[in-house]
Length: 367
Ligand code: LAC
Image (cartoon, rainbow, N blue to C red):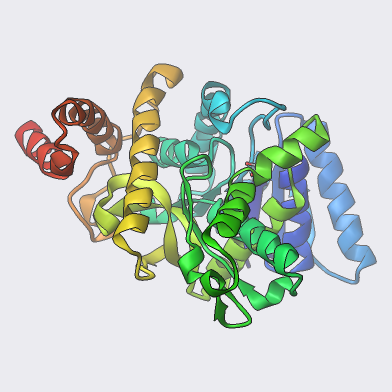
């Protein structure tokens, strides 16, 4: 029996729960919200909708229903208001994420957690600390959404079916997003052969601003149809162990020169979460964009301690859990701090290329 839990019964959470039911990805869907009546209403409405469609799926409300979930989708938090950036939500949503993670840790300790709450990259890093799960089991959903927006923008510009467009975005779910037009194709032809650099940049900018454009138009709340579709893509690859490579916010342990930081990268997703991080053959300039995104995320993660107050991290999990580097959960924040300070000092000296070595040396000294 497969249980998928969705935390947060707002528009993103409830449309995700409905899509999971429609796609028959779970025998049981749990839905939770601080507004208990809203979660109960959504559970009834979704179960009745599935019945109307001849689908036996069931949606159940409340934290008890989360027990033993295979996948947990964390959407709880406030959406952006017009004029707000995703990082304006750091403090408010940080507290909500930590509270929810305490429950998830207790009730679904073996789950794969997909974080959707904004600011996405920072909330994913925070959730991993608060959960104390191996980072392979905590990912953030942004890349499949941003890539879909890039694909839709390309399809509209060239008036071709979206299904004939391949498009990829990496980096953050924010201003340091890294659309990769070099790897984008339309009917198998490279996008770079079809449009000028300036035209492609316009589409990339529209993609970076894709979420804000909808927030402005809605005046209240943010998008849900594309986010929920993009979440379901990840859920499917995990619950069916499809092992597809999808762009997600994942912990890098040295890949692309990014150490112990969450950032948007292509990752193979299977039953246990991230199977591997895949290099699609990025150029030096694209890697530089990815690293700039990772550094910005790391510096914001370093600020989270002040936001959250008490340390939410449980004791570090066994190092062998990930079969990777010897890294404890606290290092994520600790290394970020070292990185931010070293970055400032090296930038003054014009020696940023030494950043990794300086940080590695500082970590060695500290251990
Ligand atoms: C968006 C918000 C949810 O991109 O971040 O639509």
